[in-house]
Length: 179
Image (cartoon, rainbow, N blue to C red; front, side, top):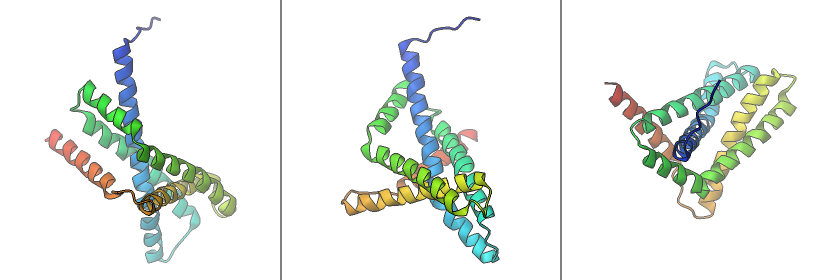
């Protein structure tokens, strides 16, 4: 079995593409982490049948499976028409954006704390897999909301709707390209 060695340019292009796609996956689950918990809470309250097991399962699966998949799909659709230089520019802007790095960090730390806290509190009421995934989703949402509140308090210009605008743009671009 032989392996072909990639040139430095090919390796850099692959790294840039991976950085952008990873960012898109993060944005997908972060967006769903903020949307899914209140949505499923309202749905279960309307039905008058709240179950921590079902709630955590729905929130966790929707956030991490659905959100990540949609984020990666939207990113792939958006990057389909870009050349290597444009992908590199996008990767450099993502990796050098301090606010973006901070929201990702807050989301990850919140996810870990949410998974640990929810598992500690609700382990007897729901299976561990659902307490970990659902709690992580709740923690990611908490981390993002904390980041937004802190940024607004510090006087930074925050556009939480920008993530939704990017998702709509990517979906619309994918629909137009298929037709």
